[in-house]
Length: 294
Image (tube, rainbow, N blue to C red; front, side, top):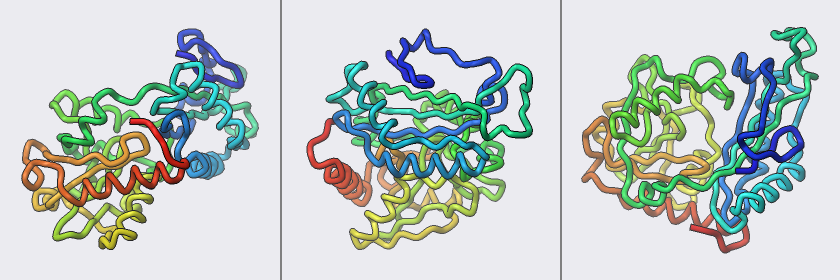
């Protein structure tokens, strides 16, 4: 695999960052994950706008240049044999470091950042998950996002641990829940439920990430004549839901067919989820000018 790091391309096993990098030492950094379709990135401006807002919030001087990032993505797709494929891309920006000042408290915004990008094929099971649905496992309150839940930072220990526990239990995603048993989000996704023909998704003020795909799904639902509201969703509400689905930039829309071992609805993907899946994919292809991979 060829990766991009600080303006150069490397074999993945040759790429190195400083021991004093702020991302390594303190989780001081941001990232964006996006998807390419037949080598073309979808919603790149939206991802870079969110990344820029996050960088500003934490005092970084660096801002990603859309033209430069696009050129890197095209080069990585070509070098990794993904120019005609759908792929997953991750862009990471972390605080540069100085051995003379391992914990910079002043003028830290001007430290040269570490900027990396890599691109990998989509998970082999994703198409099956989209078609047949997945099982999810709810976590205790200790696994929800901590400080700065609205920022996509490198502090992902709780969510990664939740995801590993879910996988160990035979589930493909973990649900993060707050101290009042309200569902917040998935470890790597946002959550929607359908009941009586209407959609609900947890509101951002509860402490969750404003996913790019979440916004798009809400717009698609509205355009399709579906009522879609932001409202607290209790774990008990999931047991009564007709349908549940997750969404994210790479996974698009994935049905949930079981929560904590109990079936959702009749245990199969529902009609609202299937309809939104088709509308989302059509919107992607329209935005990219038609075509697209699998």
